Length: 490
View 1 (tube, rainbow, N blue to C red):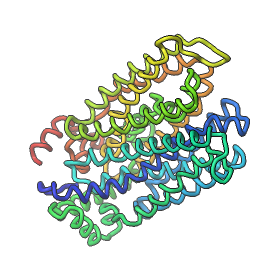
View 2 (view 1 turned 120 degrees about the vertical axis):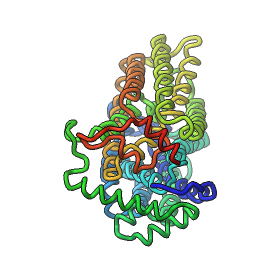
View 3 (view 1 turned 45 degrees about the vertical axis):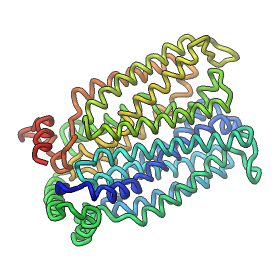
View 4 (view 1 turned 90 degrees about the horizontal axis):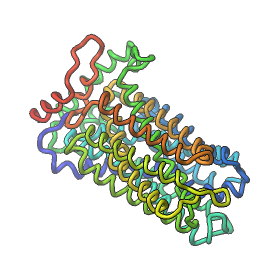
């Protein structure tokens, strides 16, 4: 979507809308990470083994995959705002149900319900932000999704620490004689209500309005959020794009020769899978358990987890500052190198562990080395693959398939997340060095993938990004040349 060259005075309004839309990311981060402080207490209270513990932690991710898959279709049929409200309701129901769970079976059910909400938020927020943002600041605004996720993770781990430390342990009774771990889940009800209320105040996506034949409403939205932008050109671009979409959809918009899907869809899927296969959520789902295993007390482990989440927030701000200045590919490539090195260091550190009372214990300086490497890994991920994958998923897909392709890519991300999360407890019990070595291997492989397959979209409008992967038989443009010409032409 195009805008005029006079955009600075419009930025405040657009940033406000993008920030409100990204609150779904906050819930995403909060709900998915809140179980970190509750893992040991749940395992103890319900008498769970390693495999069932892993499934109880990871089951929400299956709901995420389903929610992400459905979100694009629901958003195209009913609009972005109603689907946001649905996500907020699911978050609220999950929070209350998980807090009052009487056994592992119904806890899993309520976590699945919350997963549906997370999956919806993971698709709707980046799509909505991309569709209301001017190209000049779209990368930074799209990064607000990841910033909101990191803030949600931080808030969840901080509230976990507060509840557990105040009660004297996650398993200890707190308010109204409910265990502290239950209050960790119930705390999610507050941001869920805020998210649903905020969603009702947002304007609908102009693209959806034009798609629904409500062009006057779309024009009114553009006029309000881009008062000095070229509204006529923006509407015309959307209209032309939608007409092209309809022609494409007659032959099956997602279909291609590469195993039934277009190459660009596979690129989105692979980006999503690599984002998870480096093992980032092991840090945020199991860090409290992990640091207790290497000698830290529960209070100290929760504090370390909070510090790690703060680091994640700060480096995401760095990524937001750089994404529209130096481009997507350089940041991803440097992040892959940093993750591979830090994960490899963790693998070496844990290979030096002794076994004390059946648990690993890092001797001498290896404990601090592992702690520094884990936080360096978070820095490298948070400044690159964390926010940049969401930016690219909002940009690389043609307008004709954006919502649906985002749903498929996000579903793949949640399936990958589930596989990593559910396999970590048994893998860690077998060999932590091998586990982190596997994650390091995928980090190195992600470098090769970006170098050879991922296009640069910096400075392009969403419509121009459509030309990166033209239909078979047409001339393929050079992405680098496209970016230069886009910048030169404004």
